[in-house]
Image (tube, rainbow, N blue to C red; front, side):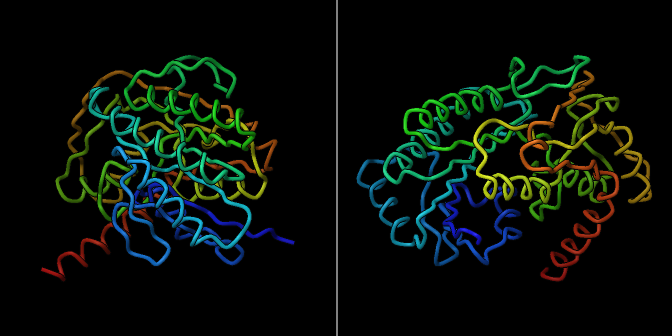
Length: 313
């Protein structure tokens, strides 16, 4: 028998959270969301990245309890400020992310979830070393985004151990998929949009860089299995092999039918290889690298969205 659960999402507007909400099986679960913009009966208005007074936090907890139906509550922390490859200053994002962590943990203290899932990042590992990094290897974050993710991991681990709560940290590799906002979330999506619109794409590293891309849908599957298997621990979520940016650019040029201008921010080659055996051993799931095969599908979605935009003008 499938055990029914309340899935409480913190940060509904991230593209990964939106994809999860769309694809997750709701037949035996219900989703409650904390979000800036309420657009559903089970949405709770909340700005996690701002300081929230105790009275308002208690009110948020009361609303979660009011909407809850089942004994099991799974808290998933998607909310985060900043992007892995963007050049933001530490102080520009830390205040917001510190508030996210504080507010999230205060709500956890009040409601005692049966499991916490945190979307972390594989950007915590050192790059350009000839080895496959596993979850026990040394971390070496080199951006404000990854440094703050590591701080959050440590604080969540301390809370989970102290309160005997299952904590599943998913260190997610570079994600891709369709995002109609054409934002920096999902770099392949952004490249395809810029290739179509401007004939130019922006690279944060050299075209020889190799990355273990993983799709939004594969991340949703990883979260789904983490819930159903009640995973407790830290897990790398990435495809089985890396793909060079050069391969991806060649495929984008083929699909859009033109030679692209490359705006390279940093000529440094970025190479990271990830060991995902721990997640496979726990779930039986391996993620195939389908980024090249999925580029045309993402592009077709972009064209459809651009047509809708033009029709509205």
